[in-house]
Length: 454
Image 1 (cartoon, rainbow, N blue to C red):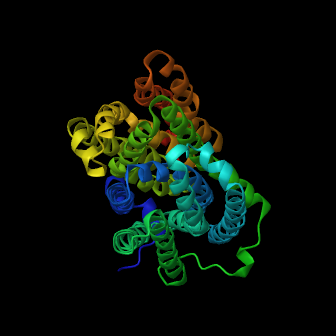
Image 2: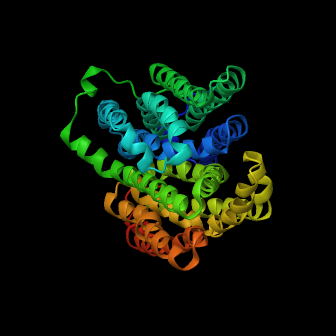
Image 3: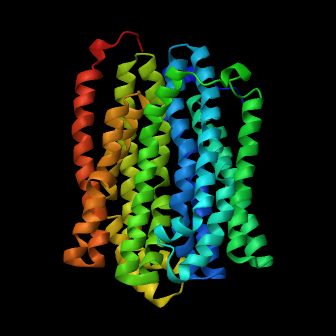
């Protein structure tokens, strides 16, 4: 593979560059999402529908700890992209070293806490009744591998910051394929049940880590760090933390949402409603992969060109990313509105779940065509290092709108009110994001203020 320089982020046409960055990101997310999707199908058909609910209980806990790595990764990668754009290689190297140190320290501490309080955490996130025992089995094993997953998520964002999306894609593909093979081996052939599903997931994290480690040790990476870069630097740690806090807050809100949704739905409809939410949640991860791919591809382009003070290119990247993402979101919307029953049958044959899930899926994805504005808008502020507006926009959908709605609407509409909260919060958060993004573009991305020529 020919060597690609990060400097291309500042020179290639935006449309071509976005496709070049987004397609590998989308493929990587697709493979990872397919892995989660097929893994859930395997678990539902080979272990049972309760096992799907059990995994859904564990995911917010393990993903939150892993998201610490993603938060450190995205926060640091924003710094790295802008540093490379400004030709400040020393700062880029020091930032990367600090990212590794922070990820290891923070995630190991959270894992220890999570294991000590396992009997309290699992029920708190909805692991009640018949769900408790399989959730506890899955939780314990998966948590062992979460620090490795956090390092993988951190490393993946740095690879993108270097302008190497294909390697980031490979890093997501290897563990996904490995996990599916191990699922068949551990669940179907060895009949290890929930423990088999958990070990397949944990071992797949190690496969991802092995590839990322190889990448940074090879000639493909521009970031060749040594021991002096691992020592924590106060100013860099502060900047990583302020930007990474946006991602961490997003994932924390997601975890809180899972906690609330699992408990609210359990009270309203028992294991059936929790299983329906688990299936819909898998589709939220899977179906929107090209939109998330556009968002991932947009981040290094916006960050690099902002660091290089090429503001016209930043503005163009925003507009182009929103157009591409909106088009893809609309196609996804049509598909999900037409085939929710077919999708649900892939996961389970449980009659009650088959009745509840399709209408829930239609409500959850009802506002999908407009979410591109919200995703790209929040990503822009994070990419250019504006932590406070990035944080506030990240909180709008689930923190400011969705969580209050899932308490209010069920009082009037029952379980339907929970599903209605999804499109209403999407519409409201998109309006808020559009306002702030428009003001930012008009005020700070005026080509007249540009210093360096494109």
